[in-house]
Length: 469
Image (cartoon, rainbow, N blue to C red):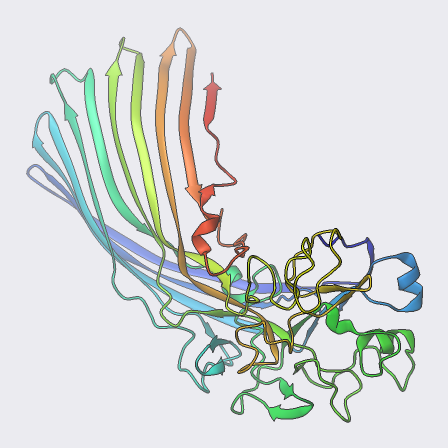
């Protein structure tokens, strides 16, 4: 287990958000005809946001001890470079029709259908992009026409009923169900963890491998990049590494000064002061679909007195095609450990730590004589290293998450009597899923088994009692 000390230099922000706007037009028409109460209508919504959000734009440098801080031995660094100002827009269109049908004096049925169309996010100057494992870095307006294919089949049916069993209004059974579609928010796609996003795809960055220039991704111009350095920070005695430049910082040896965003495989390049390091990215599946939730309920309501009633209901839902994350460039594991190191408990592997040494996780770092080094970049343990040696983490956003919620809900309602009213409620429930929301999407420990994250969600509360009076 690797522990970071609290010796850190550098700032993450500032960030600017706005102006933002949400413009909405909606209208509906109601029509009564016999036993039918019809309603139909639609809406148009325009979301616009101008913002400049990216973490670590001033660089974050971390040291393991106070001594290493003064000697210039960096533990790791996270640096974001380039221009992050974006002007984004999405549009939404919805149409619906609904019929409340009084079938008999004791039975009412509700039937409805809604259609929603949400456009794919656009940026005014096409400064957004993604990644295709078969092609590489892509920018809208260059290699691809849009970030992903549109989802045009979002039909949302609704059905419900209310049945007065005896016809006296004292015992009523109610039930219903439907589909609800989500509107994808900007944050998870544009600035996941305020750092990675489709706005930071380094298509315009200078790419290097083996000490040679690979140019840019087909003439693209997004010059922003996120460099996550672990063992690649180097040492105070190796020119071209960040550690060296930190310890020997001067006007002629800048700490970290690229004229443009740069991604490389950690090999020194002639004419560049600092060795280009691998960049981390977030990309989206070209067939990204709109997540939706199917929800249903069935309950009974009983009037105990003229002012006191009891409700008992089962309420559930199932989320489908929720957004989830995985790392396409996760180091290949053998027996749970990087093949470059093996199992530190047994001392196996080409560079295995001594038997009995503290266990660790080999993701970006390894132990070398007590210092943290690099066990992935250039070692062949990264699946995409051969084809894209200038990339580190490749976070992949797709519809690989789901959720389930089931609950028993009971409410005792006392309407105002002699000036007193109250509601006493109890819910017994269980919420299951892989992620609590779109912003806190976790990356699986093993990206080849995304469903291993499925379990009780962070917001699950088995027993909930409420009382108001």
